[in-house]
Length: 283
Image 1 (cartoon, helix red, strand yellow):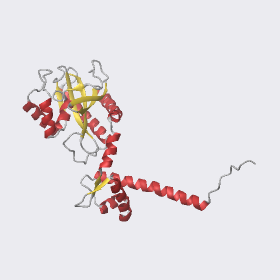
Image 2 (cartoon, one colour):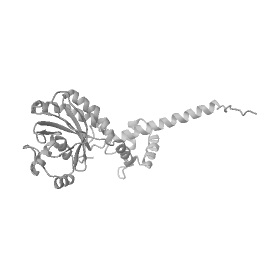
Image 3 (tube, helix red, strand yellow):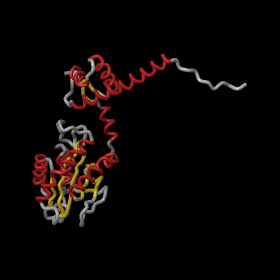
Image 4 (tube, helix red, strand yellow):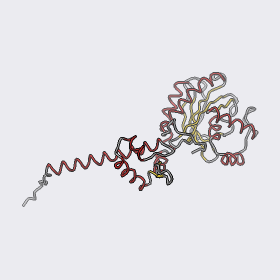
């Protein structure tokens, strides 16, 4: 006797209940993400009442959702003010998503746009231990372009990229760098005196950008700007380089605006919000 292959029909009432349950689950997820995003915008913390107002939910609804997020470690509640801040597990998730490969894939289109606008070689570097490493680059469109390779190590004290990353270090990190790394004279213009380098880094912090005027390569100039991540820390530096005969000091100053725009675009991709208070130490 052939077994029946008919399936049991689900009553309309049960179908409706299941659909409502699924909709409720999706709605809860959407609300939880809205809460997380709002908390992330308030680095000093946000109260339950203000959070509820911002996300457009009743206090009790917000409380139950954020309570679960606190229990899971994605949100912290400050003991004194009872305000909410982003928790460690959220930072862990974000940091895990932004590995070197991800950084390169996000940075490359922005570098290509910068090169298209300036016609010059563009590059993105990060700090790895005591080294400054170029992890992404795009070649310019004109003749006699700067040549570099991905993974190239550059001296911190003699390049614009390096100066940006050194300027972001804490006092103790910078002291350790100066104790372990030689200020080698690559050209006649290379900064090799500790006091002069510290003054140069102060200037980088004040202006928000760094220059290399023939300090690493006697025939090249470069300008670089810091890139910040979702925590406000410096994640890397974007730079633009070109030969001196084509990139005068005036042209370098003029094109620094486009480098700033590229750095802001990449910072936004990494979750940095301009209203955040940047932190001094490097990621």
